[in-house]
Length: 160
Ligand code: HEC
Ligand code: HEC
Ligand code: HEC
Ligand code: HEC
Ligand code: HEC
Image (tube, rainbow, N blue to C red):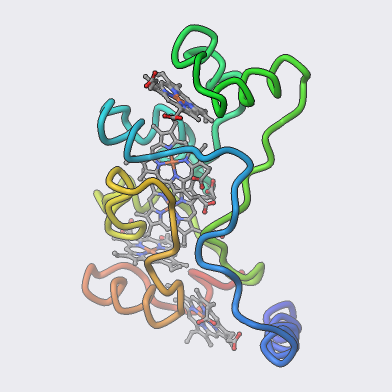
């Protein structure tokens, strides 16, 4: 609980100092989920490969993009930028949209295994060009669902 108390103090400090974080941060490439996951029906775990296996879903490395974009859409300036970054060995630095404070433990794996869909927490991602934060990520939000679904609600489930 000591780490948690320090985090509470830190969270208070952040709240006192700044505006809330942006809900849809700027990205290096205008990557569209509507196009890839919607129109072209690519499954979420094709790119977010670890969601069913571990805590973090994972953002695809640029070589995954290049695997298609070596051949596809090469007339598009944004695609040329992706390919150039890959060939130059420069990673695309995506900015996080969903982030919990460090004192909270979350794991994708258990939620996916329990049949909670990506969209339950992230909204209809396959319909949007820009991913924005749709769920509040508050403790109350987590606990409400845990109560409804008979998932654990003791403090140490989410605070290690
Ligand atoms: C072709 C690859 C690809 C597919 C398919 C894909 N995504 Fe993504 N996803 C990305 C990339 C790249 C980012 C980082 C850029 C951004 O935030 O838009 C991302 C970001 C996200 C984020 C925000 C992550 C953060 O920073 O917090 C969520 C949530 C997400 N995707 C969910 C989904 C869901 C749900 C699906 C299926 C409906 C899906 N994605 C399909 C590539 C993909
Ligand atoms: C499985 C194949 C596949 C993968 C993997 C893939 N894309 Fe695409 N992407 C496509 C297709 C198909 C199009 C549509 C091309 C067209 O309209 O000519 C596209 C279009 C695009 C466009 C152009 C949008 C426009 O109209 O200007 C961008 C930018 C893009 N993708 C970025 C990415 C990035 C970044 C990644 C990796 C995170 C990625 N793609 C992964 C297949 C893929
Ligand atoms: C129970 C709610 C929930 C479900 C279901 C869920 N997510 Fe998440 N997702 C979150 C939370 C909360 C975070 C922020 C985690 C953190 O900061 O530790 C997150 C973060 C992410 C991220 C960015 C960080 C990372 O883990 O790579 C991606 C990408 C993502 N989710 C994709 C997905 C995909 C794809 C699915 C479905 C296979 C999915 N999520 C299912 C709640 C959920
Ligand atoms: C929409 C419903 C839903 C939401 C929202 C949700 N969870 Fe869960 N959570 C579940 C379910 C269902 C399980 C699986 C319980 C099981 O495996 O028996 C679970 C399991 C977990 C586990 C694993 C528990 C264990 O047994 O060790 C953790 C950790 C967890 N959730 C944390 C969180 C956190 C943190 C948040 C908020 C950021 C959150 N959850 C939001 C439904 C949800
Ligand atoms: C299902 C997950 C979950 C459970 C169970 C849980 N918490 Fe949390 N808790 C969170 C999340 C997510 C946050 C960060 C978001 C927020 O502050 O609302 C948080 C934040 C906190 C904070 C910091 C508040 C702040 O202002 O930053 C404290 C203190 C806390 N929890 C205590 C507890 C205690 C005590 C319990 C047991 C009675 C508990 N939590 C159970 C998910 C959980």
